[in-house]
Amino acid sequence: MASSRAAAGPFALCILLLASPAVSATFLFDGGKSAAKSKGKGKAAVDVEWRPATATWYGEAEGDGSTGGACGYGTLVDVVPMKARVGSVSPVLFKGGEGCGACYKVRCLDHGICSRRAVTVIVTDECPGGGLCGGGNTHFDLSGAAFSRMAVAGAGAHLRDRGQLKVIYRRTACKYGGKNIAFHVNEGSTSFWLSLLVEFEDGEGDIGSMQLKQANSAKWLDMKHVWGATWCLYGGPTAGPFSVRLTTLSAPKTLTARDVIPRNWAPKGTYSSRLNFDASL
Image (cartoon, rainbow, N blue to C red; front, side, top):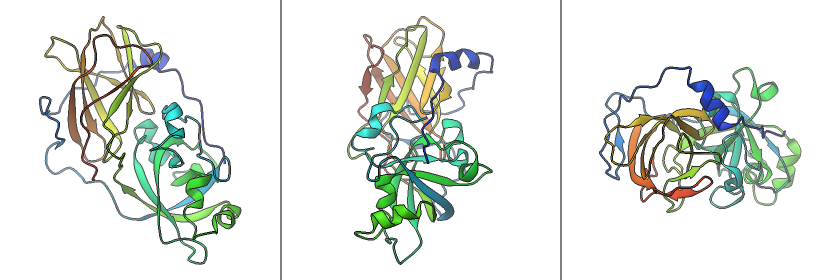
């Protein structure tokens, strides 16, 4: 089942979003400290219970899966740490793009061919609505390599021959092996149109809100979620260096990266922070 779909241009979507009300900044943040903090008390924790779903695979038999995908990660899906761990999910998990970057463990149930070991996958794409992916169903369309890893040793090909499986899944913490959160400036960005892609977020992996602060300013500006893992800011001119603060979606925590995008930033540039969320849920 092919699952990759083309995403709309972020700047065209950013224009459309101007008609919608701005999201208020309602969070208390850490003023630039590197530690992530919980947002308030009494918030629901991430659901880590095993749940039923279905799974298929696509691409080459031992392939890495989608090239790019609806989350906008581009060539990152072809290299470690995402390589061969990518997954396309149905809309109920994709959440209009806000589910991008979340990590799940997926395990099949036939003890005659399935390993007791679950495979960990990262949401990088959306499985188009309809069929197994529609009707509110929970479905994973995995790379050939990820699907095969659910089998006992030597049985990957036999498992792929089945095509469609009943599986169980649960959320798990994303772990990017020492990488820090990075911000990719999307092509076409200017001082009036700034579009950022968030990469390598440990822990929950998903983003619920994102704000940006310019140089020599105390004001945090709300960014708009455009598509996938992309957020944009319209208006300006703006001037770097930029600080960015993130709030996770599922069990809200916040993190602030000061001056992470330099004054001389450039479109298509990627800028790494010096921090990340805890690699736990």
